[in-house]
Length: 410
Image 1 (cartoon, rainbow, N blue to C red):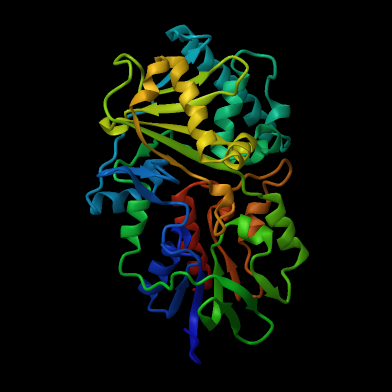
Image 2 (image 1 turned 120 degrees about the horizontal axis):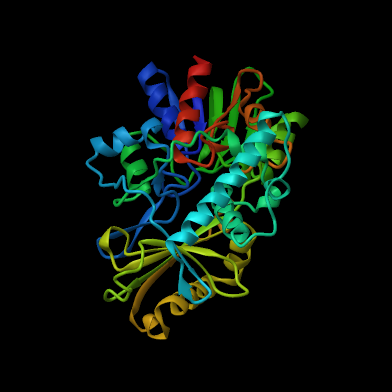
């Protein structure tokens, strides 16, 4: 793809942010190239099939803050199916199902902890979620687990100020057809160079020169939408190097880990009275959320995050399958695994084009999201979920950031 012409913008990364930027540039009549290191578009939105005709999201799955989510209108336009039903949360602990009183008590504990963090942030303070919340309570491990899902990092690594900044409307709508399906259809027709990793960016001259796996690209401006995992790893060489304050922004927003483990069965093996979604804690083990029979399909989804996700990912796919089977046997009996017919295990920490799940501001570093988004010399621009101050860790936050970056250029 080496050429002598200069495009207005070179977009690095064809995830949600890159697609949002490309669509906006096309509407403005600007020339651009969209460069993607992977074999596909969509970034952390990726849908496969766990069984023939049964979609399974390996990455993002829920259209969060749906009434404010610009991607919902595209799901409607594409005729995709989703549900507006809330996440039914049950509890299985100490070898029995929790009562309604247990669920109420857990909800009150969550509300109390959130109130404490709101007070800290409102007073201009910041600390880790671990330091801000009650540590000696039956529900503390459950609270910690769900926090780790929100940030793909553990509570000692998460900023209170960052946590309360998220704009949550409590509308979380899962896509039956898959979020990856939505993003792939959104990008259909957008010209993109796949398998085209950017290795180096030289912004020392009048124009910016990008060295890629398929040749050289010259552009007036570059929009980087790659994950903070890629920036932190130094996978792209910059000439001159990024300034220290930009490196500090990247370091203050490290990317954590979050994996989905899917087990499919050849029949309905679940207790008909079991809730669709529940969290279980086998004694002396960490809590884990499981969803059974999503959209009526005979499979279960289990989710790991933070350091535990790193550990289990390194142990290998079979270790993840064995771990979830142990959880299911504790709830539904030892025979349940006899009918397992297929499985999918994600490994975002080891994905070379992402290197993790999504960003979490370290305590005292919430301001770095705005700093990360700041352009350099009006030639290097930045977008992606980590640059969003209120919709971070989401596909729609990334999508909006791509649009905002192009509007700032314009």
